[in-house]
Length: 126
Image 1 (cartoon, rainbow, N blue to C red):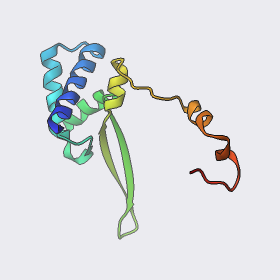
Image 2: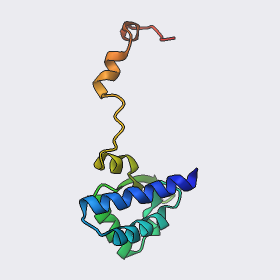
Image 3: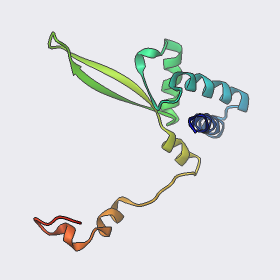
Image 4: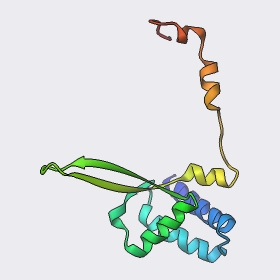
């Protein structure tokens, strides 16, 4: 099952590169493999794992919305703040770029679907 998910991600990256960056299939495959060699079966990696050339590639992939970033801040014993940066594989965003978006509900529909009891103060839903 994990193997299929891994190959699905490679396929998504290839498809986005061919569609939006006009890569040839072989080049798109090579780049997808380079990216997935970092991610493996994960959807997130730490930025420190990258070398400078791959970091440049990752910024390009971020522009194509294949990858995204996040960071967290921790306080060291010395009192200094330390930021840790992460790269995220944006599988859902890639699917949307390829017209495979699964839009189950709109944000406004969530509120409209709640029963009147949900809006009464001091009540719980069962």
